[in-house]
Length: 131
Image 1 (cartoon, rainbow, N blue to C red):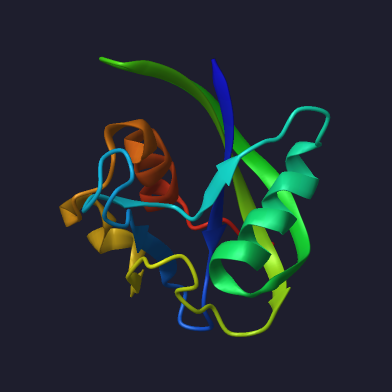
Image 2 (image 1 turned 60 degrees about the vertical axis):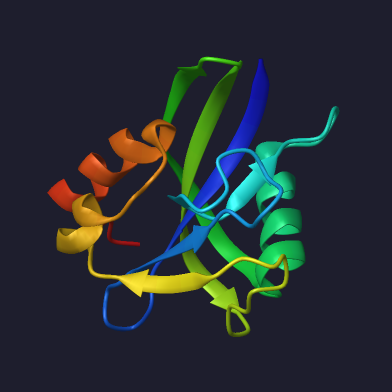
């Protein structure tokens, strides 16, 4: 099973950032919360900071775990850990060939988000986390 960290990053208007999976990647064209695989021996928090720097060019200053789940795709199983990023430095940029967009939590359910991330959407829609 692959351990993956995902980030719920909010802007000043309370919108959350989602990223489109780039061409050539598994499930390309679908939307997800930014993040990626945790390397062997790496902590989730370190993986989150590394992925956000590599994919978005931002430095995570404060984050806390929100929820964890396991999802089975036809060809793989992933364990996902969603972190709420309370503070970060920089402006998110698409450094991994992905498209990015800020979405109001109430509109997240209408996005073509990966099935594995759907429970995160439901949790974020219910209550936008306060930091």
